[in-house]
Image 1: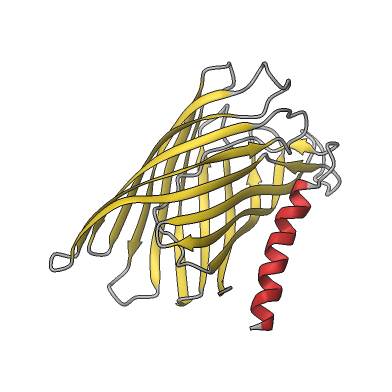
Image 2: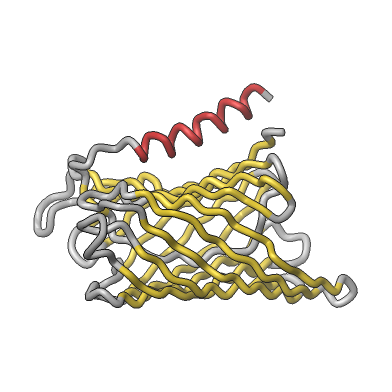
Length: 262
């Protein structure tokens, strides 16, 4: 139990370090990753970490990591912290580890608002939301932002689909003006490879349309996940995006341990 507490403390320490990063760092390009409707059990902490290499519209970027920390508060409420940290090379130059990139931090509550299950048929509908403020931790970002998503989920035996629709007002170059404003949408797929198989196929399609002049984004990801136990998921994900607003391509390795806090 002591090792679990140490891992939990380390997870929140990572989030705290990301909040304390100096403003000399460069901003990671904000992007939309569709989410699922899975809610952690009360007292269960999940630390979802992805590391890898991504080619942006310009230089390469080492992702170290793209992270989500999810803590179940009740059967229908989960607290989420979403942030990214990495290093980026200069366009046309050899890659170095001295150019730090960070993203704004999203503090969100994920809510399970309604669900209906047919146990005999193995199907279910679910409806939820994820919403909360965005902290201006990217370079040149000022003022609080906000992001909100509506989530509609459908389960058909071993197939899990979640439609995401929402919008965001990101921290911008000024506190009260020049704020990036956009709408976002996407689809999250989790396809189990058999009812009792530890393997599943993961795929996402997502994009953002900006009303404030930034290039629109559209990105597709896909890969394989292995769950050797109920408390650990391992994944290998590839991504492809459409320029000019999205990353071009990349590969990410995911590690998602879970620990019981209470």
